[in-house]
Length: 160
Image (cartoon, rainbow, N blue to C red; front, side):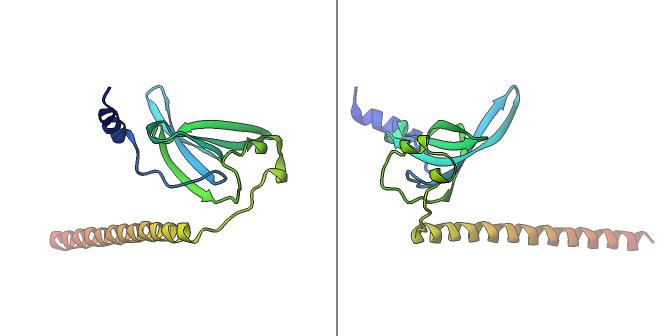
């Protein structure tokens, strides 16, 4: 089979809205769940203990502690089931596979947090733009509400 054709097809399947994250980062993965006709999103928050593969088949494993029991879940990075991925913390690690965390419980399973200046700047810029959009939307709503009240007042004064 033609390798270029395979590359072209797989290139259309890759998602570009996923943030950069590495092993040791704490992430919140919003997963779309379908139950009958209803669709909802469920959060799975934990530490990325493994990333493997490349391209369309890239996967990562997130581990969390739920009621004292370790729960791991595998995700495809490019899966349509993933609604979003949010990086909450960056952990300082020296390995690519953190399987040793499976043997640790409680405080022993914690990772030291690293503050990445490049990531902070990008997150702040994204937060500012989102905050600015929300403020602008609120201003527009307030302006529309004022205009509708003024129109109602004018209609009442004309009817009298």
